[in-house]
Image 1: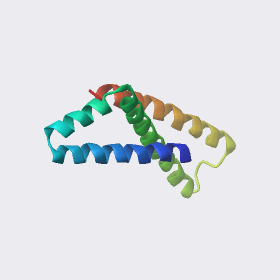
Image 2 (image 1 turned 180 degrees about the vertical axis):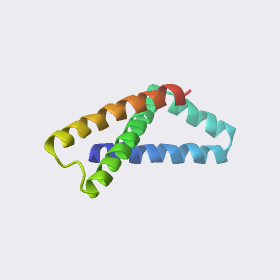
Image 3 (image 1 turned 120 degrees about the vertical axis):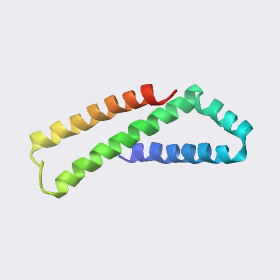
Image 4 (image 1 turned 45 degrees about the vertical axis):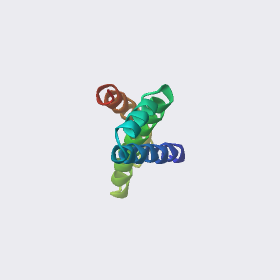
Length: 100
């Protein structure tokens, strides 16, 4: 959870930098796009997307736990794997169809 939090923080810095570059002008915006579209930029972007969805789905799981539901060992294991599976699938779909 802490590891994905690091990627969320880095992703927010990248998002802020991208938004700030829009206000500076077209040259800065283009430079920012060039960096983001490099392999390292895309890797950071994918890590940000995957971390976001993992935190989202795991947060819903914790809300359900707060209601006192899902504490059986079998359910905990199943929902843990479900969160990982959903995070990977939704992240890949978002990255493939959202990043152009």
